[in-house]
Structure formats: structure tokens, C-alpha cells
Amino acid sequence: MAKLITNLNGLELKNPVLTASGTFGYGLEFEDFIDLNDLGGFIVKGTTLNHREGNPYPRMAETASGMLNAVGLQNKGVKYFIDNIYPKIRDKQTNILVNVSGSTIEDYIATAEKVNELDNIPGIELNISCPNVKEGGMTFGTNTKSASEVVNAVRKVYHKHLMVKLTPNVTSVIDIAKAVEGAGADSVSLINTVLGMSVNAKTRKPDLSTITGGLSGPCIKPIALRMVWEVAHAVNIPTVGLGGIMNAMDAIEFLLVGASAIQVGTANFIRPNITTSIIKGIDKYLDDNNFSDVKDIIGLI
Image (cartoon, rainbow, N blue to C red; front, side):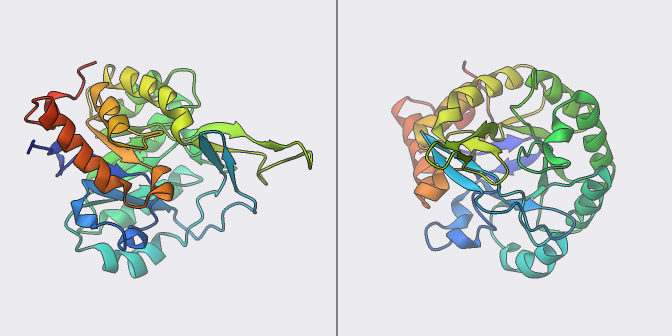
């Protein structure tokens, strides 16, 4: 059996498989299908300072080899998470990260400060890349100045692992990655969903209430692989890869191009136990190809 432990700038994972925020709820929803303790970690749904209703329905649409979503960060706010969810997951024997989002820098700061006080949450994923909220979200992640400002502000109040989630909807993802690295990010995760649109020709209306939304699923994997490869070779902090990972071989491809860990997103909706299968598949691949440690394949391309 190969060694699967990987390290994200001080955050040790028992294996390189994480779950992507927005596709795994608070983890509790998947306990009938997998043992959460088997994961390298899981990232809870997007959490904001205050309660958010999200966008009006319809806010999901199926596409060829993927799906569009415009949920809009629906959640009950960080206080609800602390009072009602954290007590139920705090003793899980794996890494729990909170995906933190906001409409203003002050929102990000306040939410990060509250999460910083939770002993059994070793890190946050700072979401500066959501394409389906009307304010904040992706706006912060689309230019180097605003990306640096929000990461720097959160870095001052958050003292554990700070992962920053990057948007693909930019001209140069390398520039954004370097900017957040310089502002104090411990790692970067990419990619978030690709801005897309779906239309119903029969009704002659968009399929989403917001007209546009975030595209995920296997159709975005080539884009994600390219961007992860670019960023992994451009920054000195670990890169976490996601985007269209549906099986173990997909995950291995991301490791080969330089990701130190991966996140599974849309696939969780299709096969709720897919993460367990991916962990076993990575282990088998390493054994079959005479690698004793997952680190041996990271960045071979």
C-alpha cells in the first residue's frame, strides 16, 4: 500500500482527496454513504457573515457533460454554522475547512475572525471566485489589486491555513495566483465554475433565473487542468486542483500536472460515495506503477 499523505504548507492530509464546497453540504448529508474520517478533508458549503437566501428559482440546469448552477451562496450565516453545525462535525478525524465568502472586505474579515476561534477547524477556503452572486464574490478575484486586498485583510485576522479559491474567468490566472500568494495565502484552489449560460429554445427563455451561472462537471476539466498546470509551476505555495473530476484517473491527472491535492465536486451528486472510490483508485494506481508515495507523481508533467 502506497503512502498517501500530502502536505499543504503545514496542513497535513491523510490522503489528497478533499470535497469541493457547495457540493457536499456540511458533510453530514453524506454520512450514509461514506465514512467522513476516510477523507483527506472536506470543505463545507459557502458561509457568509449573515443569512443569505440565494438566487430565485430556477437556479440549476443540466448541460452536455456538465451542469449550471446559480444557487447564490444560500446559507444561514456563520453564527448558525457555529451554533448548530460545528458541534456535530467538530470531532471528525479529518480536516474540516470552511468556505468563506462575502460581499465586502469587512464581511470576509468578520466571518474569518469568527471561524478562527473554532479549535477543530484548521483552515478556511477564501472564496473570491463565485460567478453567481450579484455583488462581491468573483469581483474580488478578477483583478490582482482587489484579490490582494481581500486576502491581505483576512490574513491579518485569520491565523490558520488560508486557502484561496481562484476563478477561471480571468485573462491570466497566474497573475491572480501570484497576487494572493504575495498577500499571504498558504495555498490556492482552482478552478471554480466557468461562467456560462443555457437557453430553452421552446420557451425562448434562459434556463436560469439569473440568466448566467457557473458551469461545472467533466466539460470543464481540460480548462481546469491547464490552469492548475500553469499555477503550480508559477507559485511556491501548494495548488489544490478541481474541475470535472469524476473518477480516480481524473484525480491522478491533476496530481501529475502539479496539484498537491484535489477536490471532488459535481461527481458527489452523481455518486455520493465517489470520494472513497477515488482514494482507493489513487492507491491502486501508485501500486500498479511502482510508486511508493503519492508525492512521487505530483508535478511530473
